[in-house]
Image (tube, rainbow, N blue to C red; front, side, top):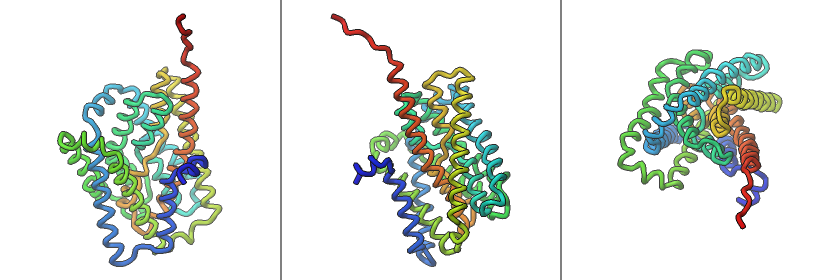
Length: 332
């Protein structure tokens, strides 16, 4: 099965997410089951960010801060350029899409960068991996505070839950476990870095739980009657437009500012990504349960697109690096 999925370029994790959506459509969580699910989801998210905190080296964060030009460009792209672009696209979509989907498009633009895939694609493309690690880590850390603040300022209050109370809840559920994890790092950090399977299960398992919870609430609230094939297609197109513009912009800015090719690769992959691992838990807190499923749909679609597009881009960078290596004649 893995070989078949590999040939078709289908990520098994994406299939698992789709399976959660299908299960939620058939067997949504209701009543006491939903109460139990909410507790489990909160615990899983707290554990996820505790592990993030315990795995990230303070030395790596400090080293990344010192490369301030690269960090600044990624930060501005993630939290200034992307939100402005998302705001413009959301304005264009307003009146053509359900308000929940419009909010979802804007929400995608407010999120921090991914961690794992940004580093993985930078490595495949032979870019500056330490810089990518620092960019992605700092972006996620900053996003815990910046994303809900931007959401409070930018998104319509009509979606519900858009208050500074949501910022406090995010700090309690996400930032506090991260800080506790940082303090626990000297005790368990090295052990966690060796437990690749365990950390992957927590990472991906928590997201699957959030997806099931969000889509269950959407099914119970009857929001899916508002999604038509035409609106779904338009969301896909707008997600692709947003991704393409940022990829071109980060590449052009990197070359204009005379970064090395290795730094350019880190900037392109960190600056163009949006984190589903951070986005889904935040959406679960910021927005009312009945609206979350619809709002996170653009994020789930964007996540899959960025994986496919960046995988192809990473292979292209890698091929260019191979052809640029000079051939040294063998000594006789």
